[in-house]
Image 1 (cartoon, rainbow, N blue to C red):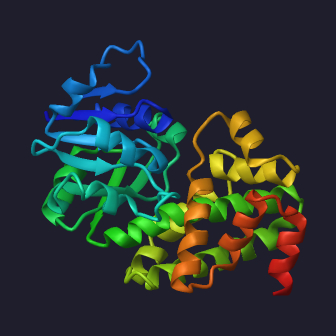
Image 2: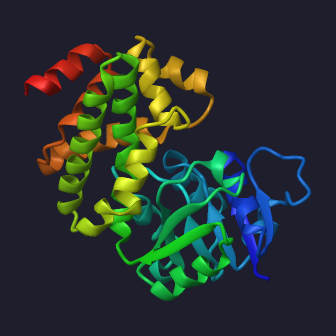
Length: 296
């Protein structure tokens, strides 16, 4: 049995802690204390050889700066997003503190509520080091099928971008525009994601597989997705602040929408759906935005 430490005790951290406990000795920590038998201090968790970190993209830079000291740990990043304040991808943030050969990034369709019920799931572990990716893959339970990939940037982009498309899909549902519109939005969202990925040299395969199409279809079609629920709230005319307060969870799609807005402007990439999601977050009428998408 391997000693695995999980950092972040939200729903996803809890689900991964449960899943990894099937084959490993797992301990978990977070900023907020949990009355769990395997809850430990941050110092104890950081001493583990294998770490799974679920700290959200908008918080991880500051967290690493204040809390992390590298001592040879192998890290699986289990969050998705782009830092809104800088436009940095998670791998760019982590590589300031950890060698790339010790870093892996988790992607693929996965709701925490289903993982904690041991329902069948398939995920991708992405790393520049396939040997490290395979080490993490061996730690996963039998009900999770794992694949490995070297396309880190593809996993980063798909994992972040699908949350923005999920907000748009929630808006579409909230406005009662029907299944035809939803299917078209998701399909065009996949095209938009892939176009953005090409600008960074990502593999098309990542967009057509579990990391891209798989995660997008899941997140953009279910109210179990917090980003989809953000869209539902925005469709009701609520502000992003009110929606986030009601959901009570971090919606990575909001920060990513702002990051994509800045990146699109600086790199000249055409991102119409992401642009409209950003405009809606800034107060534009959701119905007008979707009408503008149709008429562009």
